[in-house]
Amino acid sequence: MIRRGLLIILSSPSGAGKSTLAKRLMAWDDSLRFSVSATTRPPREGEVDGREYDFRSHDAFAEMIAAGEMLEHAEVFGNYYGSPKGPVVAAMEAGRDTLFDIDWQGGQQVRNSSLGKDVISIFILPPSIAELERRLRTRGQDSDAVITDRMRKSRDEISHWAEYDYVLINDDLDVTEQRLQSIISGERLRRDRQPGLNDFVRNLNAEFEQFRA
Image (cartoon, rainbow, N blue to C red; front, side, top):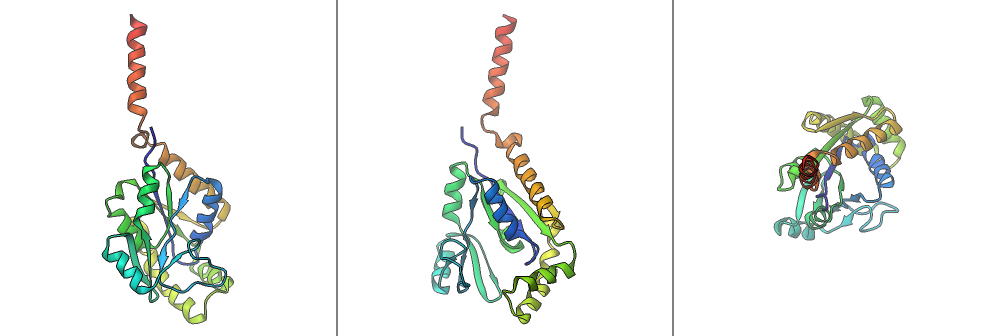
């Protein structure tokens, strides 16, 4: 019997490493499905529609919200981001886990949705605020003004750490990746996520009866 797929949420302030860790998890287990978010922001250089993001106009995004097609959505720096619901449900029913790289607002919406019982939420903390700023500047993607905005938003983002099932400090990328793998492997083995376990134990008990006979 196919196990119902999990929804694995990764959240962190920008620059703490969740996108890098998400890519490593996808390389570790190719059965994982990455939830490609829809967004109204324009593509950056090298980004491909449908790979990094599903790029939509503001009107098209609004229509998806109105039709109930978004599992979660939020406005970030003047643009909208969200997770289309249909592909996630299809993956769950096929027994595939879906990985989300979303902020605390999106994570909260997913946890509070009808799919909340299948959610594992993990928050990634930076080793220090100074290191967080250094990583943002090293990326070379944003202006000073945008980095200032991201640092200001990071304080609010970090304030929600206690809402998550697991919290990891990303002071060593390799160690953090190993811990993420352990969390996912353990969650998959939980008793309530093994649909064939009841039948297996029932058969064991039947064997006991035959043994006594």
